[in-house]
Image (cartoon, rainbow, N blue to C red; front, side, top):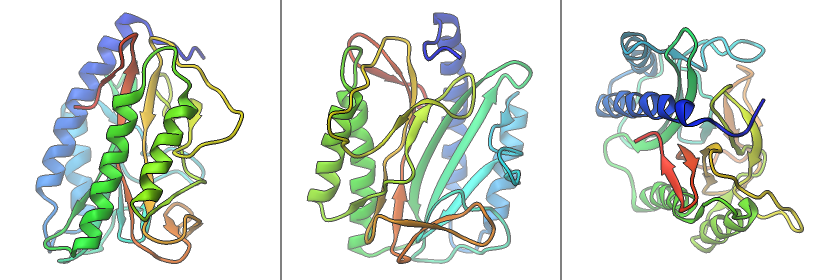
Length: 252
């Protein structure tokens, strides 16, 4: 599988990414105290199908992931399964969504945000703000010819300088022809490691940050990933295409 996408494929990805970003924004607007994560998932899936796509997470993996939207609350970092949980004031919710577009023979895009439910305290606001800024560091520092790991070092240094921890076991990835492709994209520096970016690569950049221990655990549903010490976590993600001058955000 080629890591490089053709101009035609990039155009299709941009179409799908714009649709996906619009869908996620509409889901975000429904994130208020009293709604269930299952209701958010149903809305998101309906929007994806109506747009001519298909949810890329639904049926993925073993055991098959049951939903089109990942809803991870508070200490849950990623892969939370939507259901009957009612969101309450003071929660934070990570929404991770992917779509194949068009559904018959399309390409995959992926994005995520962490949002407050009602009013949250200042330290939790900082966690969200720092994680979002970490994604901006990724997107503002990548271009063809750069070493991916040099930017990962900038991301790690920023997050740790702000008093938070970088999750090690979950990383970003290539995307497009499949939900997950090479290269793996850690949000931390690995000494003496190099991956040189090329024009036409499509990447899912996703800083994942903990307010406590950087280690994680898998919960009993075999999907939900939580911080090992149940500390609050946050997650942001964009799909981008690498260019000579920088990177273009596809999911906007």
